[in-house]
Image: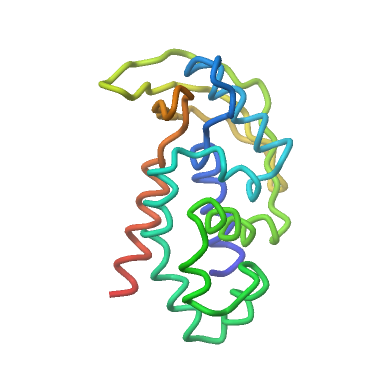
Length: 181
């Protein structure tokens, strides 16, 4: 992935990638607000432990074909720098959380940083076990600022609200899968 692709991927998905904010007493709205703070405080490559476990596994399954392609190309050294190994078997043995943290290190290593300002929950729509939280915020990044309106979907796991994968992230994963076939 080149820097431009990584930047676009980050901006399009950073607000929706990860989410359980490790506090059982937070409701869906507070969870999403806390999530934005977690990305700012810890960085995008250190919040994977906050995502719903089923979603983390699904993310790994979607993007693993990219890892296999990189292992068979000149990008093998990049794998080693991000995953600590260029062995596909060793990367496959990583937990979904370890995999996501390592994968998002690619984004963080490009010096991409995003700050959120004026994060406001506009509303929550329940759907079965999910809650869709509509959020308005300003993104302040190295390339300027923009206002955004996003829907962050959260689902409970062991009594804690956690984010699911965004549509943009799923689209990215499907694109990776299609390119690898």
